[in-house]
Image (spheres, rainbow, N blue to C red):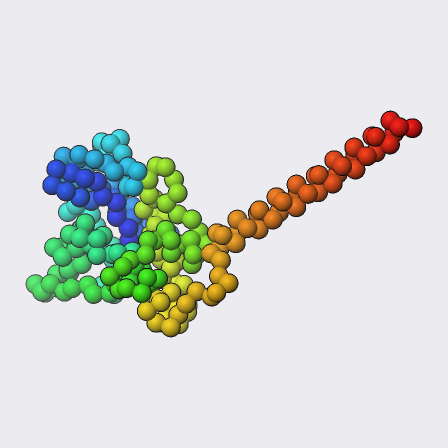
Length: 226
């Protein structure tokens, strides 16, 4: 399995590919390329994409280069994983070159895809998608997409892969409220539980400090009086 995540920028013709990252099942980044959009960039969308003007200034890698490289890198039976992976495939123009391999002059479609926005359904509506950030927090206990510099495509791809591996370790209904699966009534997200534990720890430290200060004050008062 390979998890893929793409970052886009806004050009004169719309959203175009600017970065492709792919990780394997061990969370090793095996492919990470910046891409020069063929059309003038209007907005780098840095807040979301993490892409800046400086990052693309000297890049001459084209979409065709990316398509060729990935087609050569991926085995024919590779399972591709992504969150709303259709958007990533569209950005890479997958239907044109990437996942079609020429064998004896025939084009063979690469059909093996897993979409975490589909296999995890927390809204009870197949058309409604849950954000990757929410899934990562509540199922992996890991906050992602928190930096001010935009998303990390590697971080997103790794989270996506980990979510798929978690799903495969559970029963088929896990994380899908359209089945009988539900969060436990006393459920706390791992992040919430961690924050609560830290709060209790700090509260205990404050109480201990107050007791120590109180004891010191009483001792000093006792010495002054005598």
